[in-house]
Length: 183
Image (cartoon, rainbow, N blue to C red; front, side, top):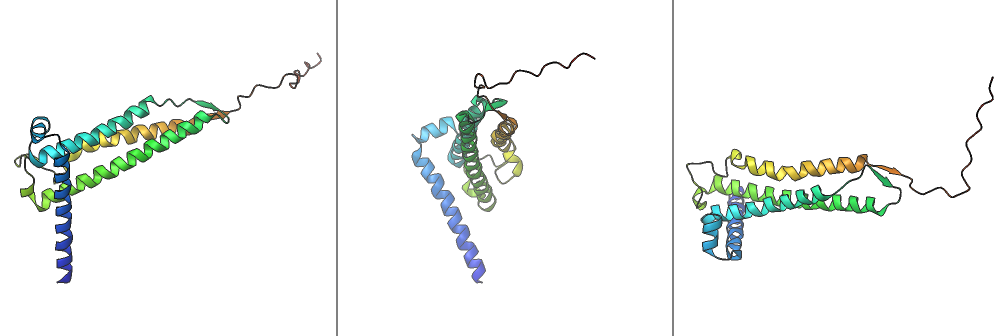
């Protein structure tokens, strides 16, 4: 009996958290008319607005990766190598945070749609709704693209050679050995 009460309490708290989050998003909007015009009505409009935010952040990460040039060789001790490595690590952190937020949003909306479909206003109930995994195929694909590009850039960075670019000190190089005597 106790387990059921705890589970119901947790579910209730989760639902309230989702509703509170959606309400906070609603208050952050410029006006209800903007939501209706730009994104749709009700929770569907809020879902679309948040999804646009996730996709924009993913595109920003992709753009930063496209703008990051990784040379095939670095000079030993070149600060550019450390800078490129820091940039890749920072973009990885940004992507991981985005991925985690997206997964939490996705799972929360899937749970809400499954447990309380009446709360999802604005979604066309005759069409696919968030509890169906296929509803998320295009969004999941778009959210995975920065990870693929990030892995490619990391592979390029790992493959880059580090060479000694210091010029030899004049007079320290030895002349080539004489040719062997003729037989």
